[in-house]
Length: 126
Image: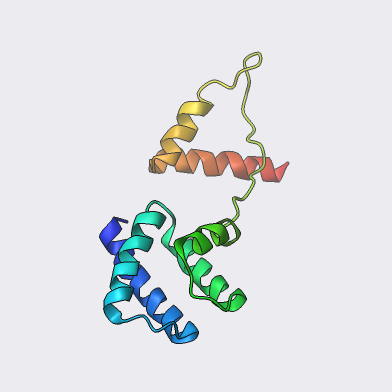
């Protein structure tokens, strides 16, 4: 998501914050704040940012700053699921081709994803 799209997503969150906290900011100030927030939050997951705004609204009696939202983001990110180890025939201490297979699967190649899913099913069956 580019910075302008993020800014457009942030503006409603800032308008909501103004409605809740009654800080007296004008629509022009909120638009400027959306630019500032977009600069500071660029590269973050937009869904996590929205969850951080909601969490801030529940936990704070003050209008949010980028620092407030950045501090809440770790609590709002989706946890990474740990996967069971993959069964593969090994040659000594190495698993031939696994790195390439994982890399291709992460890039979205359907055949590689299917092979990874098959390996995961085999692991769960044991």
